[in-house]
Length: 113
Length: 115
Image (cartoon, rainbow over all chains, first blue to last red; front, side, top):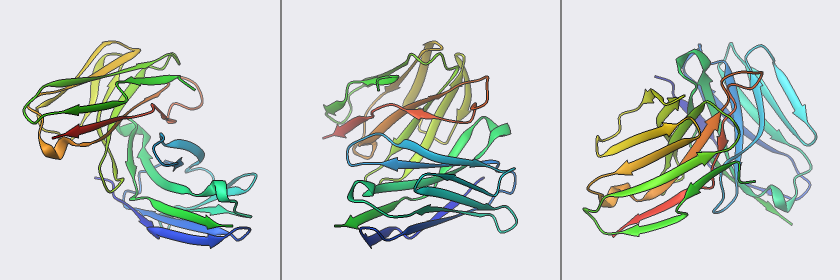
């Protein structure tokens, strides 16, 4: 089955700096890669996603890149703000396999003011 | 912000009891899911239903039984609760048609504590 590895597990950055989280996946059939942000005690919320026919996608301060050959994808947050502090999860899905999302282990991001 | 709702939000119970968690979505979605998030925050899918039909059934003890009375509801019944069942359980849903059939929207979660 699919396996998703996420690094780092914790990330501390100064406000205004960039944060990068990297994920690798094992199944080359995966074709959908969402990123979720989970604040303490809250639900995971989709912040950006990318499909396998696209190499990069940007939405304001967040961007995601996908390298299908290497089977890895990354989340980039620029100009970090204290409200970016949360746990971020990457995930991979094989859409033909019943929309099963396999999550990475999460990255706890702390933005220091 | 209540498009996917769950009840109860918190559930504290004794080992050996049977309990249910309810999930409802008003998004008109056809597919619903149950996820378990353990104490280390790891999120793992348990089940998915598509229009009341079971699609995904991961390696979950058969003490866990999902029930979908209609496509807007997916409940989770747990028999003979064990300490290791303590976790946060999230319901999610996604549409069957349209551009974003892969996008899953999560409910607020139910924190289950087994004593």
